[in-house]
Image (cartoon, rainbow, N blue to C red):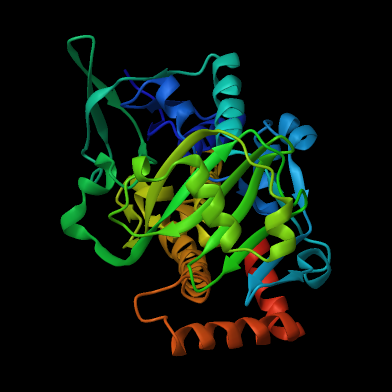
Length: 390
């Protein structure tokens, strides 16, 4: 079988790339090692920059997002027992972020692909990209007891941190990584958000907390926890009690609790792989970079990669112009490192580290106090939060 682009991975980045290429008349096939239900069941981020919203509209899948997404005009920082608003909308000349769960975004992209009759091969085992240093790449995979070959012009590796795409070029890349000494315990519950138009970040001597939302009836809450904690150690009651302790009294009183429908502990890391192009193989999304979720940049960075990569492929096939392909890695990495810096900085500022007791905690609170009372510092935070220009 032959196609123009083979996309490895049917997560949001792979599906979005496939949709954009389809809209431009470029044939593509998506290979995914998991089932469609498994992909759809993954609980992930839900804060979209305007760049990402625009790209989803360009792909023709922004209808439900427009009607169900919740616009956030501000964020709130809690420290020293007091809450402080940051007017993101006002500080950035009207820019906002939109709350819309990654599960729903994935569902929209899956449905659009199915409606267009585009090929997505789920439960593709032993996927192996080859020949990408030459002009005739091929991807092999096993399905239904047989080995299949997909011949193509380009391969897009959108298969995440543990995928085969980066692994196939591991000896040719430089990897930069920082692993943080704590995790996030996250709870998803069908309860109204404590703040329908803001995301609340908490810094306390007990550790970090985050109040966010997926809809007006579903909320996502987090507390910092030790890496060796187990989910079963945290009853719902223990979680809600701990969350309240890390917020200001008025906000803690407003929280509506309920049974968790999903509970998990996620480790935090910063990771970048350079470069992102290897002949006719390209890395995108989590295959090339990971950010701690503090800055809400993971999904948005993946969307930016897809914007650059889809544009590069469209230029190549429609105009025989290779400039976008040749500059893809450098363009992506310039934006990636700025997002990595922001996510690392916010993580460092808001979390309790092993050496944050006493002196370190007071330094964090002094920095936060300066941030909320300085228009310049607040503007810098707001500009990074809504997403830097492409």
